[in-house]
Length: 272
Image 1 (cartoon, one colour):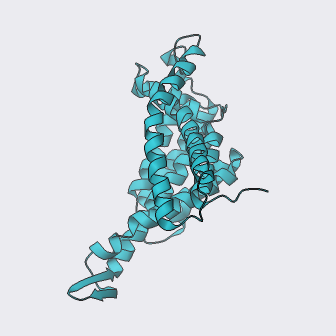
Image 2: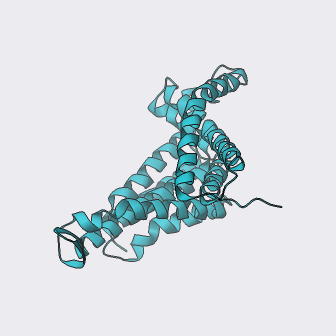
């Protein structure tokens, strides 16, 4: 009989599935320097440009993200992560409804206390959520298209010493391992619970699991670091022979640079 998975286990499984999809090796034919600079450009424009007033150009970041996910054949993983991001953004942007001054459309009174939600707050919350969602979707879609390893090689342009690329490389490999460790730990704790789980029992189980997982991460990170370095014959975690490899520009680099320039003009000048 198949065990029923709770909301936390399904969430951890979805995050692990998406990260493993993004960490796959790809060869998009784009130089690492082009990949990292276009990622910064696309995400920055999407994050700092308000989608309001709504127009066809407001949906350009989401359209580009869907096209990139289709090109990388990872539309399912992209939609799953977009759904997770939308849920968290809705929770994070909710306080803007109540802390932004303006005309109230809903008021909660409890004795001397009064909490009002304003139309200006709703506008600010929606604009903030859409800007963050556009940036997250573009970042995920571009990463799935060019691959994590290509972006990590591109980080050598920012940090030629290789410290930041090595840290990012270990993080991308270690996070899925930590998620699987958390799933096993929670499943083991739930298997030892003989009574029907209640709300207080669930919180105690989650708190003890987080504490135990926090203690295990130090030793696990040390072992993962040693295992990764032992498999690298060159002594470097990221395969980059020289810094010149980051700037091997080709026809695809020029094409994507022109598309990114057109995207910036449409988003900043609001011509569409």
